[in-house]
Length: 233
Ligand SMILES: Nc1nc2c(ncn2[C@@H]2O[C@H](COP(=O)(O)OP(=O)(O)O)[C@@H](O)[C@H]2O)c(=O)[nH]1
Ligand SMILES: [Mg+2]
Image (cartoon, rainbow, N blue to C red; front, side):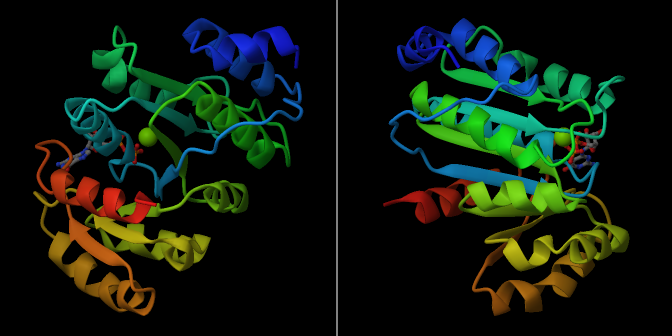
């Protein structure tokens, strides 16, 4: 990638950051450059569990603390219709005029294999742009999504209150990489059962487990406190 563009990203130019990520999306390699690495929080879990809704609340709480935040939502499943991506954009729209927030959905147009690399480059660019916190959201259903979570620490697994969510997470292997277990939709019946079912796996990993309701914000302060504790150097 042209060094002029990378320099503009480094200076905090948001338009340059957006343009650079578009180039990454189209397959252009970023190349090497020195940069400080910002801690990346990974949010993964089955579709519909409430990851994006939860992230929208996290953005608000992070901004209330005066910190800046960039979010990359990786969704390889909807390259053309962009259904989920559009939903994410609308949900996070509230922050669109806030310079301290950068939200970007990345579709990789069916490119095979390159998803983790492209995500890694996009995250490096967001880090270069100087945000205090970075969040990456993936639909935790495939191998490359699990790979993307290698870039993240801590990894937050979000599941809904249905048994199937937990089974799906188990099958994808994300239970084994999670540092924080979140059972979202605590307002629905079943949340307590799913929490109980996941407690053994969480305990085995020394991971925290909690119930949230993203639509009301319940439990999200606790989640952010855990994230802060795990990202404190
Ligand atoms: N009842 C309830 N619905 C929620 C909650 N969190 C998210 N949702 C809804 O679940 C649906 C999927 O949410 P979304 O954030 O897009 O899930 P994602 O696919 O994991 O990113 C949306 O209709 C949300 O409004 C919650 O805590 N309780
Ligand atoms: Mg989402």
